[in-house]
Image 1 (cartoon, rainbow, N blue to C red):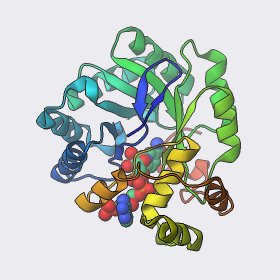
Image 2 (image 1 turned 120 degrees about the horizontal axis):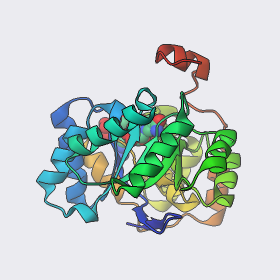
Image 3 (image 1 turned 45 degrees about the vertical axis):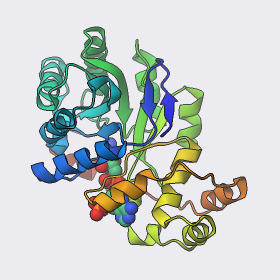
Image 4 (image 1 turned 60 degrees about the vertical axis):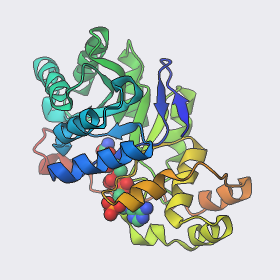
Length: 279
Ligand SMILES: NC(=O)c1ccc[n+]([C@@H]2O[C@H](COP(=O)([O-])OP(=O)(O)OC[C@H]3O[C@@H](n4cnc5c(N)ncnc54)[C@H](OP(=O)(O)O)[C@@H]3O)[C@@H](O)[C@H]2O)c1
């Protein structure tokens, strides 16, 4: 396991487990428990996943000291606005059964995200959140946060994998000391990405699986990753990636397969209508 240092001095395990779309309470709890047993110490959830309670139960049942686990959740835009955001943050703390959240993100840059940022800053002051960050923010929106922030975002969580490598955004974030977190690190399990010929060739060369090659590429470019899995064997093998390094030439090979194409490519105005947000 490797830790990265956030700009505010806290450390974050570079690899964790994600729980997006695990709606079943027991399935989510078991995935997190399995991961913690294997050695994962970083969990990525969100209010909108509706599984914070299961994550909290797994943490409690694991008996691992709270301070050894890095816990991220995300504030959904319907919870933006001073009073609503305060209440939603308290609801997350209650569901997760913790006194503090390690990292809270603005989930999407809709509605009054500047106001929501200020509320999160206040909650850092009150000790309910340690670090704050953003998710799905493009360069101009990151800049809008930086223009008003008393506390800088420590991460930006965006879709990132070998077919959408986010090179321009990464350069901008690096300049501003913001780490990139990769969602859809495995393209949401997309078979075409997982069986890409370059990845397959490297898997043979290093004696690893295709998934392990992709996850290690994330680690080597400095991404923070939390692949979702409910499968105990996948949870185990996804974590067994810290015993090899890809050469410079092989990293360049993966850089060359970038299609600059996200899988989640619904236009923002359609997303807003779907999710009932104002434009
Ligand atoms: N901020 C955002 O807007 C946002 C959006 C989406 C996701 N996220 C976060 O990012 C995390 C990861 O994204 P994701 O869950 O959508 O996609 P992902 O991690 O890229 O892919 C998950 C899929 O890959 C499969 N998989 C995992 N390990 C595997 C392995 N070793 N071999 C073969 N298949 C494997 C999983 O199936 P099994 O369960 O069968 O292993 C699942 O179908 C989420 O859980 C969430 O925490 C954030």
